[in-house]
Image 1 (cartoon, rainbow, N blue to C red):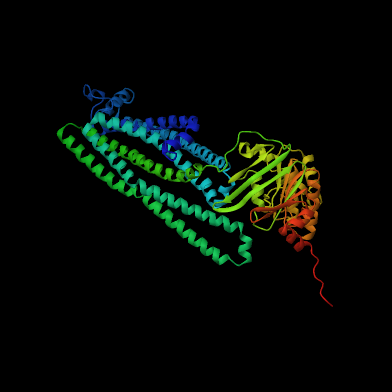
Image 2 (image 1 turned 45 degrees about the vertical axis):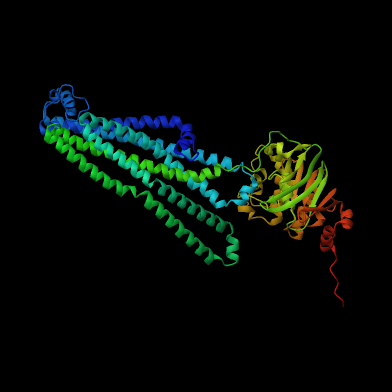
Length: 610
C-alpha cells in the first residue's frame, strides 16, 4: 500500500472515525433514497396531465421501476382518497415538497457530520505529523526551514482533511444516486441506459487524462506557499534587524516576488483543476442530445411511452449530476494526494538517532567519552575526543569560537550520535539508552535562551506543572532572580513578552537558570551563560552559577576563564581536538591556547607614559 495513495489516507485517517462515518453513511442513505422517490411523484403528475391510466395501465410483467408505468401505482393508491385531478396534483405537489424538505434536512445533517470528519481528520493528520517531527533528530531541524514546516502542519494538513470529508460524502451520496437512477433507466430501456454508462466512461477517462497535471500543479502551488510562509516567518522574527538596517524596501520587494510566485502557481493549479468543468459540460450536452435522440427513436417505435420518454429525459438529467460530482470527486482525490504527499515526505524521514531500550534515570559514577568524532556533513567538527566526567566534579570546556564546544555538549546530551567512538554513562553506551529518560538527568542553561510569551512562573515550570509553588520559589532564589521578579507588575505572574523582550539579558539568563535547577538535575550544563552580559549582569549571573554548581556535577562552557578557573578539570579544545586537559595552573604551563586566552582576558592594560 503506497503511503500517499487514497487507500492509505482513508485507512489511516478515516478508519479511526468510523463511528462518525457510519452516521454520515446512514444520513446520506436516507437523504438519497428519499430524493430518489421524486421521479415516482413526477411520474404520477405526468399520469394526471397526459391522461395516462392509473395502476391498471401497467403492463403485465413490467418492473415496478419501469418509467413507462411507475406513476400508475401511486395514482391507484391516492385515487381512493382524492378522486379529483386537481386535488391529486395538490397532494402530489405536497409530497414532492415534503420529499425535497426531508432530503435537504438529511443532506444538511450529513454536511455537518462531514465537517466533523474534516476537523477530526485534520487533528489526526497534524498530531501524526507533530509526533513524528518531534521524534526527529536535531540535525533535521538544523536543515529545515521553520516556515515550510508550519505550512505543512497548517495548509497541507488542512487541504488533506478538507478533501477527505467531501470525498467520503461524495462517494457515498453520488454512488447511491447513480445506482438508484440507473435502476430506473435499466428497467425502462437498456439501450438508453448504456448511453448513460458511456458518459461515465468519458468522465473517468477525462479525469485520468488531467490527473498528472493536477498533482504536478498542486504540488508546485503547495511548495510556493510553503516558501512564502517561510519568508514571512523570517521577516517577522527579524523585524528589529530590518528596521535597524532600513531593509523595509528590500523585504517588500522580496515579499512582492513571493506573492507573485504564489499567485501564478495557484492560478496554474486552478486552471488545470477546473479545466474539467467546461470539458464535462460539453460532454454532458453531447450525452443529453444522444439520450433525447435515442429516446425519441424509441418513442416513435412504440417501445417507449410519452410518459416514459419525459421521465427518461428527467431521470437521465438527474443521473448526469451525480456522475459529474463523482468525476469531480476523483479529481479531488488527486488534489488531496498532492497535499498529503508533501506531508508524507516528512513522515517518511527517519531519525538520525535510534532510541535505545534501557532506562537511565540517574548518574552514579562517570560519563566517559572514548575517541569521539563528529561531523556536520563533510565538515569534521570533532576528532579523537576522550575524557571522563566524574560525579560531583566541575568540568570546564574552553577554546576559541568554532572549536566544537557546544557540539561536544550536544553529543553528551544525545542530540547527535558520534561519527566514530562512543559515549557512555556509568558504563552504559548512550546508544542503548532511552533519550527522554536520560535527558532528565540534566539541567541546561543554553547560550541563547528560549523564553516564551508567557508568565514568569510558566517559563520556569515549562511543562512540569507537578512542581509546587515552593519549588518554583526555591529555584528563583537559587538563580538570584527574586529581586527583579518581585518588582515586575504582577510579580511571578507577569508576562515577559516574546523571547523575554520585557527583561534584560541578565534577567533572562537568571530565569533560564531557575528553569534549569527547578528539577534539581544531577548534572548541570552551562553553555556560555555569561558571554553576552554586561559587567553588572555578569556578576549577578555568576553569583547564581556559583550557588548552583557548588557541591554538584557541572559541565561549564565558557569564553571567560573567570567562570572556570576553579573547575576540577578543564578541557581545552582547538580545531575540534583536545589540546590539553588539566587544572588552571597546569594548563597555564602546558596549553598555549589556554595561556593565550588567559593573558588576553587578565593582562593589565598598558599604562601610557606621562
